[in-house]
Image (tube, rainbow, N blue to C red; front, side, top):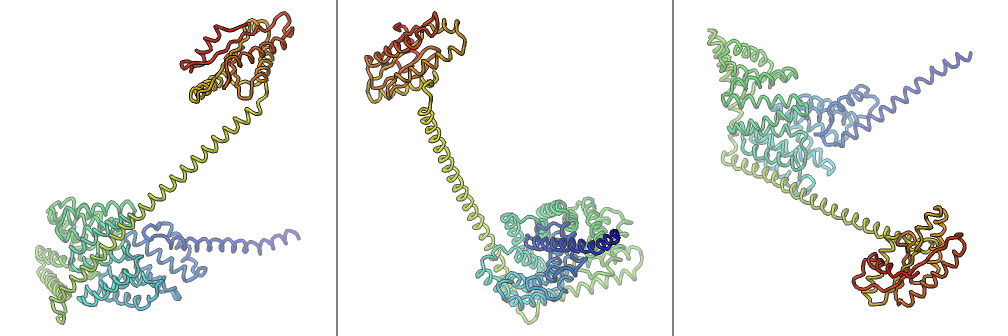
Length: 610
């Protein structure tokens, strides 16, 4: 019966323990999300975020919609840090599908979706999302999202040749930043605008802004995603035919991408290196970089950059006179391109295919490929044509104004950063000096108190010392020198008395240490009892003593020595059996040459009276 009751209790209690453990895990996961959400997005740990998100999204019913929304933001951020832009886009789309999100979380996710569309060159979708955020983000708490949305919309307007609208949004950005200086270091805004000018074909402006961004990131010590800045910098250099600079930038991007374990970012940099080397005639090295980049793109299923790498592999194979490999890559590129909308840069694939078919005698497909190329080229030319309503001079003027405005924003941010850096440095120096002063004061107080304590202890020791205590020979010497200097300085008499037990060695030979110690104590007591209020006494050696009498004459010290000698003889009369203490003494006043007591005493000892 008891066993059954125990089993029943275990049956009901075990689930309670499991439930309590699950509740603790859920609470810890929520704390982790909140902690990571407050960190700089560039410095988020990839593996930890992935592990945490699996726990949360695997049991969504245990978490609020806000926590799930923040989880998708964290996932998008770490994907972007790795250069996995398509993954970041999908995470943001999943997050925005949640109902009941707080405005700040919603706007954050919407702008990540807008960024995904922008990278896909879907500018109308980017513009629509940015407009929605601008209309909704009308409170100070979400101002930064409004600024980013305005920047995205300004970019999309510019890309669609709506320059007046673009300028209007840029002016709003400038006004908002001037009123809210806390957004001076708006790296995100500058990155968006720099990328926009690259896509607009204004590579010099893009290059200028990317260089400013690079400087700002080093000044602010925000280097986690520096590989992406180097990548954009390399692309701008490449378009301006500055191939050596482009190579160096792509090399830095590839190195930093590898270091932070971001294979996609590194692959884009390798693609850039390959294009530079191709332009410089280094076909073999270019081919090798392309093999590495294409393998990564294929593994990550990034079809568009993979197609670009295949086209370039075909080119390098042709230049290396490897016809079979050349045709292999072209056929692979043709197969991949069936599911991709070709960009202007990728359009040359159709020309290469036309040339391959012509070489193979397949003139029908060669003609078709060439026709498709011409049609695609016409489509790009139509998109590039400015609107007929806008006067070309007005359009150029608007572009110049927007360019200058953006560069001013970048310069303003740089100056603000430099000022902030100097201000912070000055504050650090001031704090350091304050700390040093405080430590110095504490040290001085400590040593002052320590010296005071030592002096007090010395006074107490002197007051509390027994009559049998006499100072050591070294202290006797110091006392003599102090009294000598004071007497010389203030010109008062100083008398010195020297007393010795003449037969000390003989007594030491005949009596043991205990008896000799008692003799020494008795002599010390008699010496201390005989000295005046300001006199000082001390040992010079075993059986030798010094009596210092400031403000005394030789006659006065002589009387004290004589009395002391008689007192000693009386005390030790018949105490040592057949032996007695033979006392000798001498006295004198030191001259200007007698600062060393031992020289002075050696002279006194020669005149010792027994």
